[in-house]
Length: 219
Length: 223
Image (tube, rainbow over all chains, first blue to last red; front, side, top):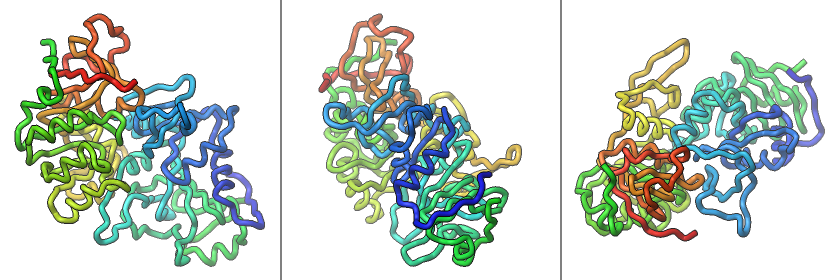
């Protein structure tokens, strides 16, 4: 557990991605979810030697393809054309998800609607009347990797905390999230305890007041 | 037995009948056997059950089959996309049945069918809406859901090359569901850029052995 730190300003989206990238262990196999997590790849360094997995059957995914490098047979999970790095490999879907489900990926980074203090994740369905449900690989990703980290804004547009006692949105996976990166704080979750690793533009005390869950300050 | 080499996509899909269950390869457009789907459209078969990762994009391929109400039921992981308007309309009108399956469970259910597995316990989906009504079990303290295989009458897939014995190689992420779908259908129908003589694909790089392949059609490639 790292020591508690604080900054005056909120983290920007790039700073959040930068922070996630810095926390990924060297040599890790990593899956970055669609949306904010994809931005993490822009801050990984060559020295880290991280290998990116994409659910549609590839390890060693490179940056987004441009110009002549665009190839419709080489896409990521968001169906965006990407490139392949030296040492890349391709495999079929059952192998790709066996890699996930079998615990072979070190870290998976996902977006979320809500996370509970026990690490339950909701990110696939709002449950809204008339919404067409779509799950994709979200449930497999949530429970498969050795560590699942979430990137999200801490509060909804109406100011409610997305870190909650118990989910009110439909569950994606139970007890799977171990860390949450938000613009105002970074949290570590373990055994129902929420530890605040850092705060940004808010004090620990103010944060504790605004959240519906009990918080522990990192030593 | 060596696969049938069809002269056209229309000939390749000619045996597909009303009420068939069809696995269709592809993740987005990569690996989607567009010409075989167009031929399926033209052959008139209806009341189909289709298994695909998505539920059609824009105004092409699977989306058109859905638009024409030829698909009774779709089994997929991610139907809702920015350009899935034909599915959205059919679904909201109650004119298509949706079985939503987490993507890894979808892949494993297809694999299980091809491998003769009667069911398997997976942690994916445990404790969620998508496991409601399904048998569950706690093994070594972890929750699992019983999932069953998805068998099909036909598979329509796209590969890069086939040899005359049906051995297949794929191209990059267009491989996706192709290899497992080929194993899970009574008849696997494969469109390829080119059919090459037996012996010209290195046995070490064959991805789908010809035993799984029933019909091949060469359609030429863009590249």
